[in-house]
Length: 187
Image (cartoon, helix red, strand yellow):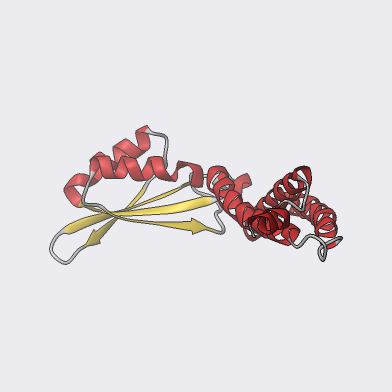
């Protein structure tokens, strides 16, 4: 019985398993990035990634389909490569952190200047608006920033006001203000 299981698993040469897994991981990671880039309006890099993605897909899929009846493990390795590629693609996307965010913080009026000064000293543009909470006067701070800087900004806000209500949203279009006009996100 164990011999049958082992012969089923080892029916595909190790080099071919590695080729299928690695190529599929790369292909799906590229696909994940392509979808994100296109969604953020980055058409040129998205198109280049699409070309690489489909080339890899054609060669890997044909390799798996050829001889699938004799070695069904190829399909399993292909599927594992797909799942790992999705995981790797999401990690890469988080590391690249493409795009802009709008971070809004609702802060007690007497804490606002401390937070505003900390953000400005760190090089971030801050817009503040007077607001009225249920019981006290508040200030709403708005910071538009690169997504790569999001965690640093959130950390600065929480270090200076633990009780701040903070919301972060991705921005699909941004023009003017503290950000240069050439940094538009959408065409």
